[in-house]
Length: 102
Picture 1 (cartoon, rainbow, N blue to C red):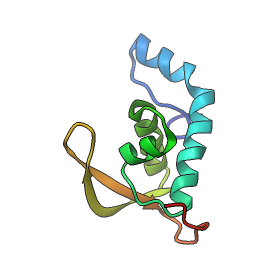
Picture 2: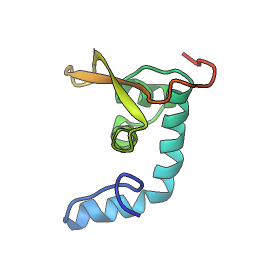
Picture 3: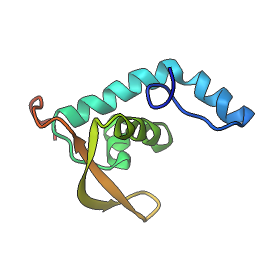
Picture 4: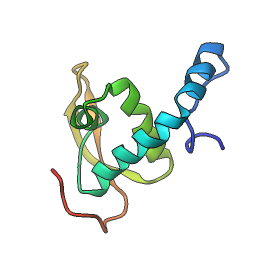
């Protein structure tokens, strides 16, 4: 499998090694991220990372993978992220969703 079903990397040794090392964890983390969005979350990757108690560096790529799979859509809203820049707020693409968590 290739990106976005698995972590992506560029043609650099460190990037490829890191992507390969996180494959098993990435699947689990991607599912946790997806669950929050399926339950009605409308949030940036930073907010999802905060909700999961995980590093945004681990969560942002999972959000990007879900966007690339057309599972998340841009709400048009923006919120400030940890770096002070504006970040896209996403929601689950399928409007049929489970009960709202937050």
